[in-house]
Length: 277
Image (cartoon, rainbow, N blue to C red):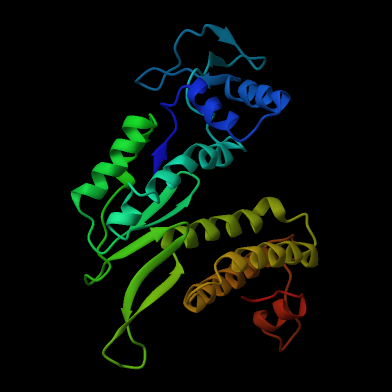
């Protein structure tokens, strides 16, 4: 993963200008890059420092303007990363790149990328570091950068919410297969999202409306993670949704909801329209 905090705006805009010629659009992008950033001011002990300015609510803040990098959480940051790193893709696949002399493959999404090769030697690493940090002015996140040998027992690679690893054949045969499934972090983020959707603040919503929102959310989530072998992860999500909805319906009011006599909560949620993964 690369960090764009060290790229001067002029260098970034030069890369954008090679693909965008509309001056009004370029001006808007530059204005967005140079937008004012407001931060809360605290010292090392956690107590606020004397403020250079105050917000309307009376809180202390620090006002600054970026001269390099992109604003954190910006909506077009992934697009700018793709435009800027497009030239890294071109160089990687050129006659001088690892694609030619190491038969390596590059898979990139915005500023996250994976390089695949039979042997990850120093030549590939030197090429990547020299081009990204030397020529492009980027900073490689060393904490998130590592070499993974998937043929080793227990080795796994997490990328874009998926976990890639080789597992033993489920039918007892000697060979292994490449298992692709949602990662632990992706499952934890999904559980956190479902907690928010079924929290105490959502008690004002009718049961059928809340379940409709959950169904739409789960449909989008499952469409992304349906590749590979997600059955075990989908079962965990289904169980968690049933547990959260059951708890949510029981606390909806002073008279908690209860399924009809002889009907289980599983059947009651099915009657209310819950769609399982």
